[in-house]
Amino acid sequence: MMRAWTLPMLLVLCGSVVAAGLIFRGMPGAAAAVLLMFVLLAGVNSPLIFPRPIGALEAQRRSAVDGRPVIFWRSGCKYCLRLRLRLGRSARQLHWVDIWRDPAGAAVVRAANDGNETVPTVVVAGRPHVNPDPEWVREQLSRSA
Image (tube, rainbow, N blue to C red; front, top):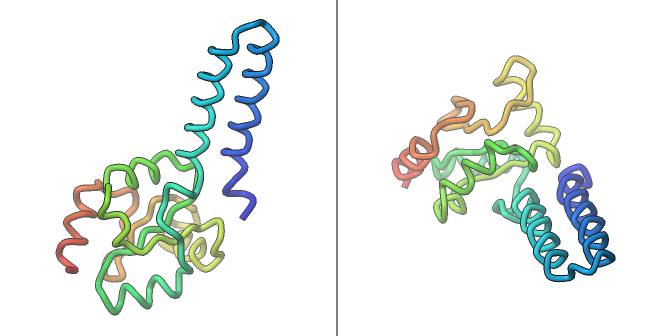
């Protein structure tokens, strides 16, 4: 779990160091702006922006029942973030599996990608799709409803 928070913690730490340097130079306004920017970057790269992840086995079970896609992701992945942001509110309807928190999810992704942990990997009706277009994912979601 700590692995998912490494980048956000580093961003906040770096922002704090830069802001402290600016404060010592007599620029508190610039320090506040820089710190705010680093905190926002940390928030965007944190697991908080994604819906609460579930385990791969539970996600596959739920997907079999309701037909909604399963998205395998990891924090810090710019392609996962792009998919999440472009899906908007509909992202909450999908089943999200964090491969850094769930070894079974990482195994599913490796099996689908020739041993690589390439994310986002979206599984629809048992078929994996690597880094699909967000509109295509939204279309698959509407078909399952």
